[in-house]
Amino acid sequence: MKFEYANMAPLVLVETRLNSEGPFKFVVDTASSVTVVGREAAEAIGIPQNSDSKASGCCSSKMLAVGSIQIGETSRTKVPVVLGNLTKLSEETGTRLDGIIGSPFMKNSEVTIDYPRKEVAFQESRKKHEPPTKSVTVNATGFVVVDVKLNGKGPYNFLVDTGATKTGVAKHVGQALGLHALHQKRKALSGFFAGATMTLSKVDSIQVGKAKSTDVEVGMQDLQPLSSGIGIALDGILGYTFMKDYRVTINYPEQTLSLEREKMPEINSSAGEVK
Picture 1 (cartoon, rainbow, N blue to C red):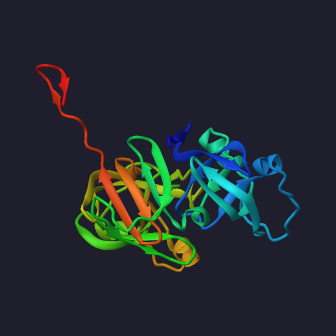
Picture 2 (spheres, helix red, strand yellow):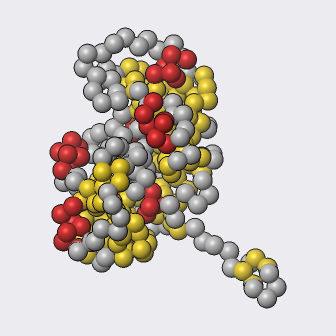
């Protein structure tokens, strides 16, 4: 099915139905360990919103269950969710956001996000897949971590994060590679570091398996809080500025990642024909 981007940020948005109601706009976020339902969407489908004294950040700590969540032809029942206040993220991205699709919805699936074609698919896991895949680590809460080479060096541990508008590099890795700041610090719009500042830079190359992109903009950040939170020492975050050129497939049960670059048609300049 087709997806769209938020107006002011390249977040992958899909039409989602909750208990057959909707559609609502949800962000597909592989780095979210929970599926979040915005309070307005929750009210629309009749989920009780009792105050929660343990709430922190944007989301409640209390887990609820939605009867069904459907994206395209894919439906999951009794999906655990938390309630969230997405007003700030909606304002920063210029788009009303109703929720976030996290790992509880995706953990038994093969998830494909074709960035060039703006298509997304959730389907049953398949053991055979082309092109060749790269093994990843999927921990108990659904975080996907893959080996990445930067400027030919590494491998480094990177979190695969479709909710990150930029690819992030840990400060200690940036210093070791001699990365230089290109611009003043900016705030991240989304992902784990929403609202945090990052120092923008560029790397000559990022390589995951055989997939390689050059001249990629990155943000240097302190990743220690995130590393501590998920229990994995991270060197970076694989975000939109790398994945935008690829058809990205994550097979959660098989713990593999496939990156296929879109083949552009050849143009016969003399005849103006597309081959």
